[in-house]
Each structure stands twice: as structure tokens, then as C-alpha cells.
Image (spheres, helix red, strand yellow):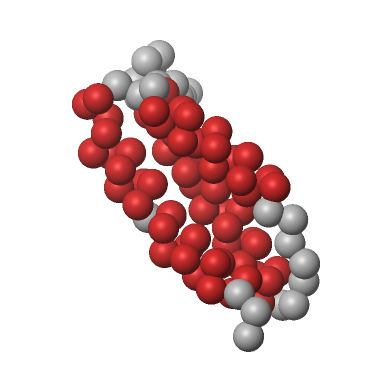
Length: 91
């Protein structure tokens, strides 16, 4: 039976792929944090800050040719960050 696994070095194990996966993880974390804040729950942002710092550090060492792809993924996080920031502001 054929397998659907990608061949080695097919792009899934590149630094850029790791950054894209981390961006998806951070997006999910931001979504959860926003849901908690909207529900009136307290949120510890330390984990979000650490994940964002790791993401930025990893993106900074990626090859230059991956910048356009990474820029799009990172820019997509900004609206979610802005929404969370607004939700955290006192009335």
C-alpha cells in the first residue's frame, strides 16, 4: 500500500516550515487566549510571549528566499494580536 509521507527534504523539515508551523501554533494560542479574555477569565501571557520570541528568533535565521512566505504568515498574526490587545484593555 503506498504511503502519503513526503520524501526526505521535501520542504516539511526546513527551517521555514518550522516557522510556519510555529506561527500556526501561536495563532491557535492567541485564539484560545482571546476566548478566555472575552469569557472574563484571567490569562497568563508569559507563554504567548515566549512562543512569540521563539518564533521571531527562528524567523530571523531563515534563508532570505523564504522571507515573502514567512512575512505573510507573521503578518496574519497581527490582527489576532490587535484583537487580543483591545480585549485586554480596561473599559
